[in-house]
Amino acid sequence: YTMGYQQSGAKVTVKNFYISRYNVSYGKYDNYTKIIGGHYVDPEGKKYHVFDRTPEHPVELLTWYQANDYCQFLAKKTGFSYDLPTAAQWEYVGRNGGKANWNFPTNNGKQEIGKNFPSFKQLKNQPNKHSGDTAPLPVGSLPCTPIHICGLTGEVNEWLKDSGQNNTRE
Image (cartoon, rainbow, N blue to C red):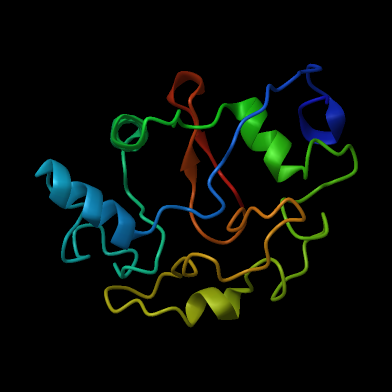
């Protein structure tokens, strides 16, 4: 497929890969933290005064190294290959298998506020006792893409394998 906005980038081929259906939640990341004896990410949810920290919400505020270490831990623990996605892999998934006219990483390639993309009201109604800022939706709140990947819009940003880039799913 051709990467980039309106297919303006390079033509790329992605090899077969698997990607998690859902973003990693605080609940899952906290289990990992407990196993390795690490420090919890903002354990009381007060350090950054942005999001409430519940087991159902996507983990936020990780460095690239923390996200990468989590993947390497999963690989070692399971014997399967785990890694952060490359930019080409992420875009391939976001564009429903690299489809040329798939403009948004949603269930239908369109942005439908309040249906497959969070509305301001949905975000504003998320519990957030520390500030008036909007909060991400819990993991799995919006419809998945046709290739069954959820949370590509309206949850959080993700890290990519390529040069420690941060990819915004929104």
